[in-house]
Length: 298
Image (cartoon, rainbow, N blue to C red; front, top):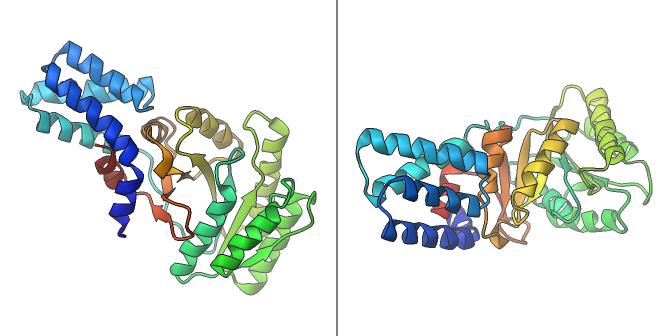
């Protein structure tokens, strides 16, 4: 199955919901205040924030008025263009090597699984990879990560349960420097974004990376569950404040019928989506493509 097919299949629930609502809208309303009000409601119903939905509708209204075109195809294509523009307001960073990637996020979003998928992705780019099991709090977290490291056939650095996560990061960085490793991927414990001391722990791990491997390109990726909806924007704000996020990895895209919050997140917070998970297998991780995403939901 090709890249577009995976994304298309993953977004089927969102597309079915979105397309049905738009079809009903076009069948009963001509362009006008009532049409635009309902279009805004449809966008909000797809988990696009109120502020972003208002901006999108106003841009479409202004362009449609300027062009004096009112048919469905024109408005749909215009909607696609405006939404894609919102997604690309956040510039996607090009990963350069040596790279250290720290994954952060709340519990249950799929961080450990994503470590395995990312390791597999970089191996396919012919890069050497070491993973760091810095989730030392969750029972058997290191064991779970070991399974994924074995599947991906990459090295893992781990300590005993309850160890200092920063010590794991220190050892992983030391090992990577000694062996000339291209990519270090750090798995961290899930944490509620309202727990200040846990956020301080992320800052401490970040300082270890910056001190011990200043020549590395350091990326902090937030792992977000696509089924979370608009609460994900709140999570992103807090984690960004703590560690200055470089991007997002979106998991469980195949389980969501509301992918619109991604548009708000990229537009309002200027944090780009880098990768998307589109299944459970180790190779079910794809680079995010804004155009394909919008084609997949409209």
